[in-house]
Length: 555
Image (cartoon, rainbow, N blue to C red; front, side, top):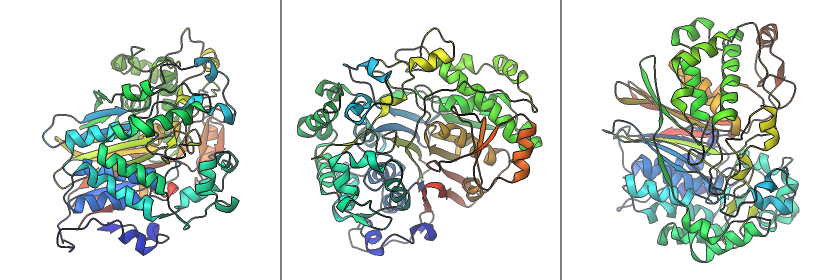
């Protein structure tokens, strides 16, 4: 097994060793390259690779990794959240897409969301019915090889024995969010012992979450959606104003959706449809530019970044004007992607003129993305989230589950008015899934998966994924160069039209200003993209250093 040593340097060896799955005879097995994984945390990637090395397939590995992420990366994901999973199974004509995103409670008070930002005692209004446990169980039943209890045991062991605080979590605990996190007694006791934030390398044990994972392994998702744990989730959410009920938990269902499909430059791409708008942005970008046109502009040139930024702004407007939960709002993505429409849209773009987005209050944060491939050719691209940092910042005291604040992704009426829309496609509705930016994507060539990627970082997910995908498909950049290169962002707030990360050369800033961009500095690094790519020698993997991720392959 190869795992980035630099990113593992802070992890105690004893804790890493405790993750390995035991073979029947207790020995390690030498093997040819058989798989790869990348995630936002070394222990999450290690869990996935261990499962691959000991008989599991890519779905088994993704399940174990997702549960591990909820333990060691709880600011971004966990059983109190939800997500999307795109699974490519050998021999299938297209990937399977499972939507286990959170839903609004049946008793939702939509008027409360118009008062955002909400005070701490009303954060429960943002809690959606969690879908992660049901989603992972559905993946296991449909595609998995290993026993469910074996996969849950990996994360259970880590929660029980303890894990070192990662660099991203340590940075989060020391950030401006610290005061809000301390306001919850459970989060304060777990991550601020003695009143001080746990720092990177400090070991945290979470026996309550371990007990929940043990029950989940023995009983399946009913352990979360029925009985004592379900009652506690309801009472915790309701203590802060939520309308979440036992009926909501019992009635939660995973949705299978048809992936959004795009043919481009000899590749077949499959990505997220509504209720995510991430795939729409990616597809609109490909529909407006040919591979040859982008190549002529030059990788990371001012003209290239400006052209993409203009395209992204155009797609974001389409998102706010058209995308909602398809159960409640018809979303005709094929109409939005019609070549004639995109050609007209393209005519409005210029390499020396910038269009501004309306100032919108809506933002997104958080999430954890992972990608896994096995030796038989199965590939998984999975994004899981509790939305903002530690979600609603409500920890169920006995089960150790952090509740999401996913309903914050519904669009406020004030933003709809800013766009001059007659109706709000992403309005808060009972039972609805709010629109997301998550963009799990798998790319095929000649019928075989050649690239899998996805990201975290709220509304930056789709623009980041698109930038790295084009860097690979147009310019054939190495994966390591893609994740390390400075990126740009298209803000929906503030005076700037484009934000550049540290490391962007001054000449690039000057070129963008010449083209009419108002250039600012990207302040947040809570965003990451993970990638796998198939080469002539097998799978390659790369993890984004922005959140201290790790990538590896099995040997």
